[in-house]
Length: 200
Image (cartoon, rainbow, N blue to C red):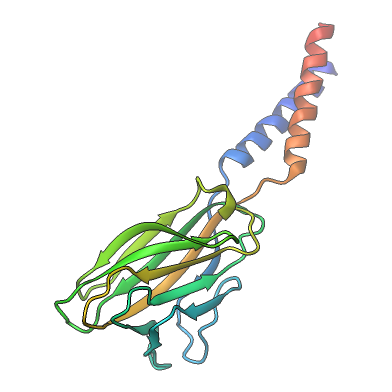
């Protein structure tokens, strides 16, 4: 009987540990602009907005979002997405230059945890094919479980030209925060084994 109880507790602990370690990333919110009638996300919820000096050049006939980035640094797009219930947040975006201009714009990721914008990694977009850019915020604890999380991409240079830029597949991903009950079950199981071993 005792051996059966021990085996059951061991199985429970292993199942909890396995579920905690193998939690895969979920898509929290996704904009893919496949709908020609709305720029709302197709997965999850959130809002998209223009950064200052960006111009909406999009058309409902296309399946991406197009802006004109002005000659002023800081133009681009921003998004507001709740990451409540998630950790290990990662951002992903596809961008391209469709205008054939030889002039490049430099860009930066930005995020706001609720106390102001922070510049993250920079990148450059200088050709006419789709480029994918990602930002891993798993080490930024404030990006996790944050109902007021915001992020964006903005130009960093101020040349004397504007550039048309397309955006697609804006994705916010994360792993679900483990339920407290899983840790409780694990602790109970380990405690039971410790008592059993002490009695032995």
